[in-house]
Amino acid sequence: MKLNAAREAARHVRDGMVVGLGSGTTVKIFIDVLAERVRQENLTIFFVSSSIDTSLYAAGKGLLEVPLHEYTPEVSFDGADTVLPDRSLIKGGGGCLLREKIVDYYSKEYVVIVDATKVAETPRNLNVPVEVHPQAFKKVMEELRKSYGAVNVTLRTYEKGKLGPVLTDNGNFILDALFDELKDPLRLELSLKSVPGLIETGIFSVKKPSKIIVGYLHGVQVI
Ligand code: 5RP
Image 1: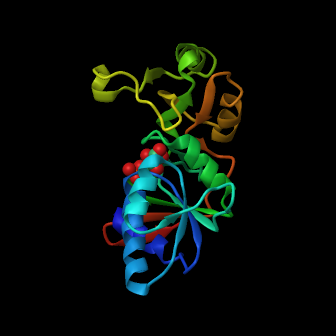
Image 2 (image 1 turned 90 degrees about the horizontal axis):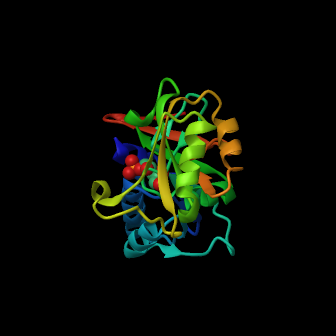
């Protein structure tokens, strides 16, 4: 399913293009497909990266990294954990949400590639990852429960707590906040950004993707 979505997305890339790259397994499959096109058609593709993982992976496949402060990607390609009915996304399963949101926002457009399991029919029972400054993680956990109605909030750890908190590429922690329902994702995204110590949320509502390519076992649907 991911491969079908990745193949469809890779058709949008042209020689000499600067693309943004998200992070995660679907994006890696997209990079594989793109790298194969680069090899077969002798293309040159530049990319702006959203994580150390993506930088290493894409560079290893022969794509050339350029910095966001010098280039504006024509289009970014990113995965998602959940696609909500209003086309908002929830991201951050891989902990790269801060730089993903930066790259997606500052690209001319962004395209999301997901397998069909990621499309939610209702905005219920959802995990929202948030990146927090380590100093404030417990305070933000309380805030998410008391002021925002999260039913459960956990600090993301390696090996179920044996190895301590997951550190993002930016040296921060990730909280996973479970919500019964996300009635207004845009409002929640904007409001969460006002909590001191909360650096970024995994809700992507402010700028929505221009295309969502949903991969099925036999084909794709573009929404
Ligand atoms: C990483 C992300 C990913 O896009 C999201 O977790 C989806 O990952 P995958 O393609 O592996 O299912 O937001 O922070």
